[in-house]
Length: 237
Image 1: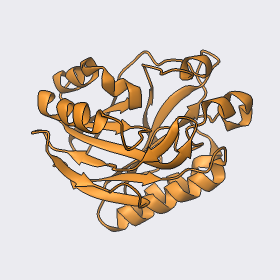
Image 2: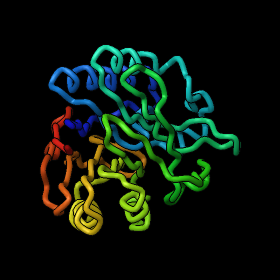
Image 3: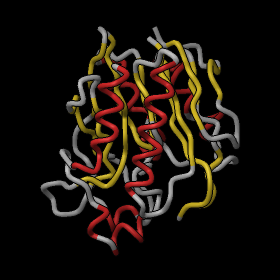
Image 4: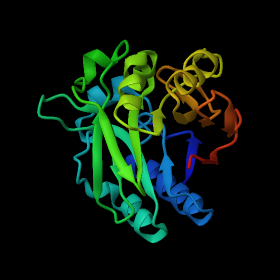
């Protein structure tokens, strides 16, 4: 299977603008054969926890009509998409939520980030369940940024028959995860690891790009580079 790992600079608080970018990337990656497109943490709003806390209208529903352009792009290309944003939960606070939109535009699953970092714990509700879905006979696991510091998530994914571990993150260029987390999770648990990351300034710093993928031996198999928006393709089959 061909998976696209994306990177771009979200517009802070502008869901419509970011959805247009997401939909365009799904269409472009799908045209190049991608069956799944992975986006960064909070790519729907930008990584702006304080702004999200102060702006209730930035919280989405699972069936939010503002995501229709992404659903339409998935249907048009036959590709699925992992999109991440603040999504309403029963707990009152939103989750840092990955919504997996299927090739038919329907919701395959949702995953709420389990391990919140810093100010996130004041704004969001932590998830309580692991994220899983299947596509074309492959089983996928979901994780979000700080989650990846906890190897037990990847260990459970491998034990659960997952072949691919999808990491939606917000990382600066000097973050040690590029050397000490993602390749280690891949190698230690025999997984393909696919990273969607951001570019540009955000509440945590400046996104460093380098979205891409690692193979089960821990070696890099795709790298989008540090500064160009777009996507890179990886064969995880």
